[in-house]
Image (cartoon, rainbow, N blue to C red; front, top):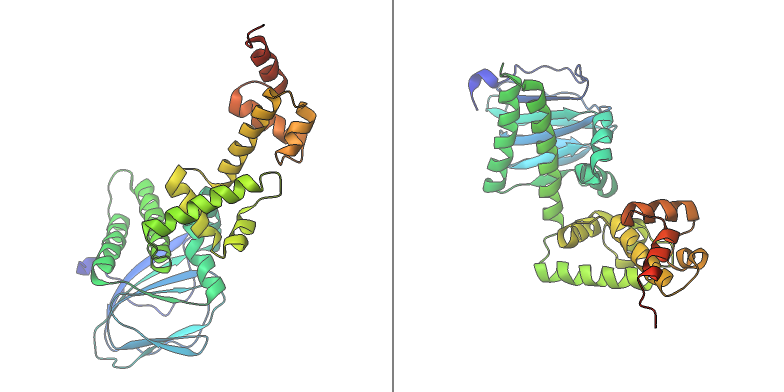
Length: 293
């Protein structure tokens, strides 16, 4: 890391920026900071030093490649064992509001935050290759912040979002080291289950409970296999079944209920968006095309 991109250490434990802050520190002879908490997320990437971290008063010795995520409100403090040794780390702060904005784009951006909140597991270890890849993204972001190039603001946002998604993906893959065969098996079982229960209330949470896996894992498997979210697949499947039932002369007022739609207006809008015409128009057009005997 270039020396000019380092930040002089400060005891400040609050954000001054609206969305995020990131720092590279390389210090010696630092004093320990008292236990504290934040109202934002703190990512901590450990590079070097003789240091441990206390989280909720539990001590965790650190080694090269450790990534720590401290959620808002969780007390923590660093304990420096040898103050004269070089102490290198990256610190990345990000607000809850910014995470909520990313969540609207995709829940994949916040898998890690929710996983840590549920499991209380705060530390994840990267191997050398994985940590080098992570550091390159952090370095790229810090370098862009210090640059004066055209499109700086847009590039910074891209780098931040890319870093957050990278962290979520890498931890997800650490937590779900499945084989392709296992993924395919889960996918086929999901498809079968949805078809068998298509007329019932179906949600991502219900599928997660039925298969004893996380809803993030189910979302990943569906996206990987068919490129659709669970909600999109269920909707398309219900519309296809309704279309077939209508062409089999089932009254439209019965068909949409049989296929799991609870509200006609929602069914009508979804059908028209999918096929370009209303259910009634679809039935009339296809009836006209049936050969007369």
